[in-house]
Length: 631
Image (cartoon, rainbow, N blue to C red; front, side, top):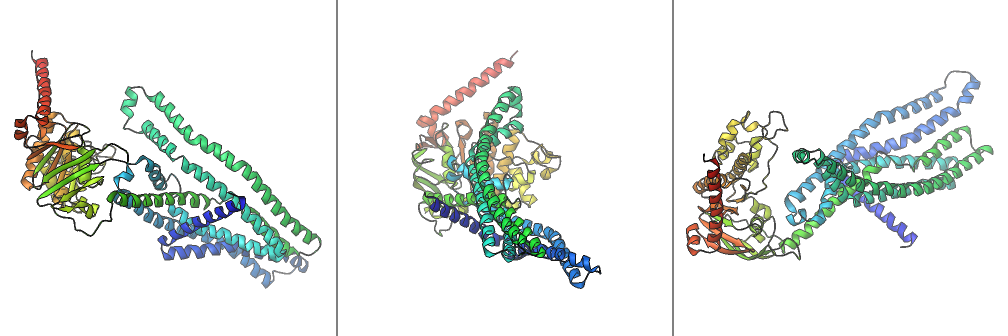
């Protein structure tokens, strides 16, 4: 690319950035936006008024000294103008800050809402779990973690930048008045050239910063590992502190060294060149001013005005702390959010194949069916499910069993529409779920994953979030806890439902693994009370021994059986689901066998083989334990 073409491209890029920032400003509200713009225009012109007034006042000092009289009315008026211009700048500055903070808060509220919308609702899980999009999500999130300026701060900084340009415009007009249009043109070109170079350097530094997102993620992980509580026990017991410290230093240097090198490369020689341009342009204008003064072409009043105006233009090339970093890095975060939204739109269309119609989400009454369903997590990956056919009767308990890696959890993700099938379809009483809005179907289903969340919130919230509209219904929350066998747990807490379930908070309590599973089940049962008609348990008891798991599932079957809930249990332990209405064996992404426990045992197939194998193992463990404790 030639230099002129590169310059044109750079100008176009800068123009687009300013337009993008300006598009955000209306989110601050008309009063805040208009007020901020007008206030900054006033603040930008007040220095010019101050310069003129002080110069006029100084120009009259010799005459006043010769007259020896009191201060004339005109001089007093000028003095009042000087004091007024200075005082106005000081008095209006706090209002400038308040309006900027108001605008930033409102714009950030809008952008945070968009980020939550795309990450928690609209974006397919294929986007959120794709490693290639992790950096994009981190960049969009970084501003709101206060790691860099926010989009709101970028928008709020635009009127502040307007004040700077108003100062420049006023100063240039004064230079032209005192000297000549040519001098004004030299001052303008010099100021804008230096300013363009400073912003260009900052833009390149910001691009370098963006390119190191992955390194920042690694550094952040190691920092959390080194200082957080989650890994503290193992780090101490295994004496990992030297390794953790060394690795943290390495990751930190991998992040910072390119920034240091780039900063020196981007700032040293460009700074020398820009300083030379600024010195040459400023010296030229000051030389013209000196020449005019020596020839008597400039009065003392004009000298005062011209000298101050030239100094303003020479200072225009410096970085502006109130707006430069904000507009550069804040807009980078906003652009990351927009790119994430575009990825979501493209991925959403490709995963769903056709736009979602207005087909209402059916309430399951007879059958939920998987027809020839195939699924791969990404293109070129092996199929996790391959031609799976499965019928889930409504109002019954269906257990899906199989060895690890058989595709059981993937099946649940497809049923919950966290992913869409690569091929095939999922039907509810004959209606293709692909024709319905995913979030509407997700209101019909409650899932307890094996890595269910343990919210560091009060017990009420840990249960009530299963149906947020019932969060304040204490009776419903307690009923769900009782149904899940968590009633005694809640009653044992010092403040009952108000007790935070975390030791990190005053008065908080932590729970055992089994107690947390009861709380998670209560959350799911409250979702059923709140309108969900399908309840799925994806190995939520993987950390329990087999006896505890059997008790858990027996209680679950008793509770859901009374309510007539359609339930799906995922497990790799065959003995724990023997009382399910229907058992489905999944292997290599397909249904291998299905039936009741008794019918599958009579067939003597894969289910019977694995059931007996697991039963023998637990029987051997029982005998071993009995031998050890026998006198």
